[in-house]
Length: 105
Image (cartoon, rainbow, N blue to C red; front, top):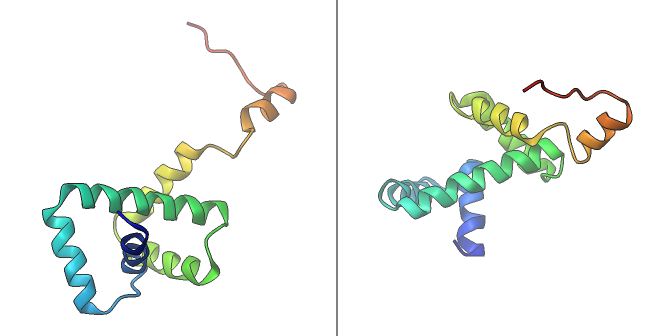
């Protein structure tokens, strides 16, 4: 996916495209597995950026609206959040506080 397609896909996900363009994207993702995978990866990146607080404010508002109206996206957000961990360096910070435990094998 090139930069122009990516920008258009983000606008699609954030409900910022005319119906005609949305229909074209939907037709493509139902028929092109590679495009579908690219959109899925882009959705995950949008969620990561939002969780990190690095999404532009106008995009954050649109993403939050999408999360509220979508049946599946809240679960995706929870999964991305769980897989992301508490943040960079969380394991070494926990070790310095003596908070980690070894699992008995």
